[in-house]
Length: 174
Image 1 (tube, rainbow, N blue to C red):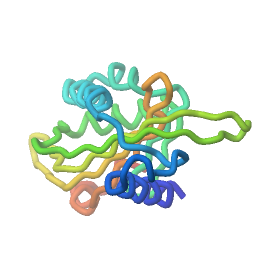
Image 2 (image 1 turned 180 degrees about the vertical axis):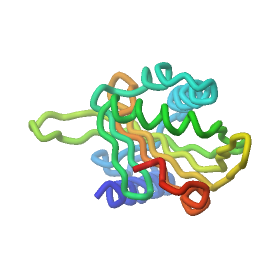
Image 3 (image 1 turned 180 degrees about the horizontal axis):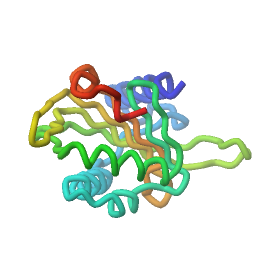
Image 4 (image 1 turned 120 degrees about the vertical axis):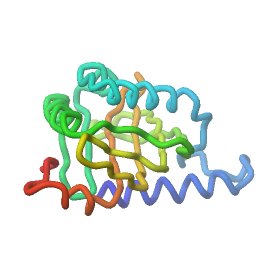
């Protein structure tokens, strides 16, 4: 379901970029300046690079979720903390130069019938996971949904996990 949601947002973003402002439907997400959200993402990745799980968690809402391309969906800071402790214990994570960004903002009606605002940061580029024994570089696509307080409510990574699974007898993301 979240993949369908992402596809719709990407389509809206492309339409927003190509249509004159007066023709864009105001109900659709709009493209915004990405600098604020990129700064948050950069700070989060810096904390990951320093293996500081608590600092990474400061960027997430209490009810945050994180989705992986193998179908694993984590919900809540405790589950995200456990995953980060495991993965950052295995890998040094580094984004490669040349990451591309697109930021959007919009609103929707939640289950309680209230309007909620959101911002989305789409990013794509290379990412390297390394340790003393190996280094794996993959094209990495990421989607971060931010709430009104600029806390991450949902993080979704899209990448080929084949090389990761080959490194382990048991997949560490499960």
